[in-house]
Image (cartoon, rainbow over all chains, first blue to last red):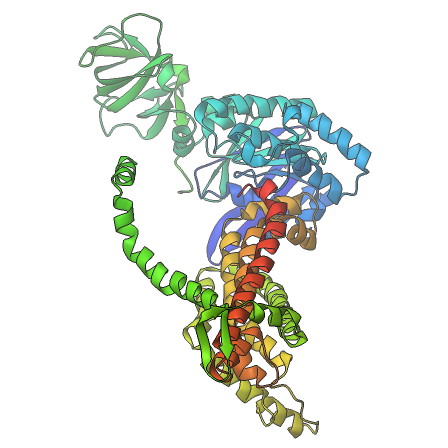
Amino acid sequence: MAFLQLEGLSKRYGTIDAVVATHLAVEKGEFVSLLGPSGCGKTTTLQMIAGFVEVSDGRIVLDGRDITHAKPSSRGLGVVFQSYALFPHMTVADNVAFGLRMRKVPAADIQRRIKTVLDLVRLAQHAKRYPRELSGGQRQRVALARALVIEPPVLLLDEPLSNLDANLREEMQFEIRRIQREVGITTLMVTHDQAEALSISDRVVVMQAGRITQIDEPYKLYEHPRTQFISGFVGKANMLPGDLDGQGCAQVRQVPGDGTLVLSLRPEKIDLVAAGSGRLQGKVITRYFLGSQWLYRIETAIGELTVVRRNDGAAPMEEGTAVGMDWQAGLLRVLDADEVHS
Amino acid sequence: MSLISEMRRGGQGYLLSAPALIMFTCLLLVPLALTLILSFNVFDYEVGVKSDSYTLANYGEVLTDSYFYEIFLRTFWISALVTLLCVVIGVPEAYILSRMGTPWRSIFLILILTPLLISVVVRAFGWSLLLGADGLINQGIQALGGQPIKMLYTPFAVIIALVHVMLPFMIIPVWTSLQKLDPAAEQAALSLGATQAKVMRLVVLPQIMPGMLSGTLIVFGLSASSFAIPGLLGGRRLKMVATVVYDQYLSELNWPMGATIAVALLLVNLLVMLSWNRMVEGRYKKTLGE
């Protein structure tokens, strides 16, 4: 049996199904992300695990113990909130000590454990400060330290990085991953940012309209998205009409309206070749400079395609240029139709 | 920004704030100054106020006469008790209010505010109908076979009516500071193992201290200088400072003495409120930084 197990977990608000019969098994020490657009039920799922939202149906089992109806205070889980939810009237050290004091840990132990955890999140020199005197990233670390110091069996992160600016967010992603590895704590993170989910999780759970639609390792999820929605939500994707050839391999059909299947092809998997050669012909309509990459929008007979090319220092394609496109047939993915709609 | 600094330089600011300044001067500063001067005037029962002779005798009398001590003491213990009761009732009420769902919160907020639309005098009469010797409550007690209780013209009547009038002034500032609270902070405390009672005591209460402080200052200040309620529900015997001032002016016609008591009330009130403000604010200012 897995360390944390959700068995048919459901939440209904009146007639609205927020979460529908969710099954999930998280192994000890694993970092799992719940990924989905807003309103997909990922935060509700996390809140049910934390105990802030009552479960309508199903069970939550933690380390063999049924905690479905346990009070939040008796679950002992570490929770990091989107707003950090620090206590503004307490110093960093008091914030961190709060959970230990509630557990009646002896004062000497408290001091030692505060020091250890503040060293872990690299905030030891700010112990005497108040939250309002800290930057966003530092507050985030305090929230992490406060959740970790009680040595919870599971760490729950609710959109932990969404209030940070882009540069800091990336830095904190790696920081969270480092701390999680160092402590070896089982972690469940809710996020709507696919890049964040892909970069730091062991496994990603995609949710849509209250249901889990795919659970996979980040690389597999990106390379083998199951449905059209996932393909478009996780990374960029070109959706092409196609069917299967004689050997059962996917192929793109170039006559509009032809092709019974929807195929996905990632923008970086398309090679740009001289006009007239390759599998598909088109014309560059616009190009965007992304720093390390050029992004081209190319008009073709089967619709507009997105192509990403590495910025290797060579002159980029001019807008209006005719180009050919080529790819390895094995990189085409057949997508299922979406069974749920958000 | 530039507009404001330009106005500052041209002195236009004074021109724009002149109506308010004139009103403030005419309606507050001048009467206060006149009252202060009056309090030093000599009073003679034969001829009335002697506006050309000055004395400190009025203040001497207020400071030495035990009658005034009793009245000041009564005024301040009643005000302090009213303030305490408003905290005890108003803070939980504001907390519950802030936790209500969308339609109910506005409905109950309006319910809390509606008493302010009714004149204090009308409400005081309402209480005297309830608490009087043959009022509704005593009729009920007698119907059940009990002895009627004297409630009207006791501190009990004054306190209960003052709490009723002052409650909105406690609820509104507390409610405002509750609005600033992050609800996730309470969830965080719960997840860290705090009981509901500890969440209230360690997380919610310290954060609404500023609101409670303003609430207590408003309630205490208004109670200590309240006139209609002690006048109507305290009767002739149970006097508070404001009713004594009224008596001095209109029954004794001793205006200088009335002015002296009024100035003394203002000073003592200021002293109590300022020291209370200092004491409480000093404790949270450092931590909340407001």
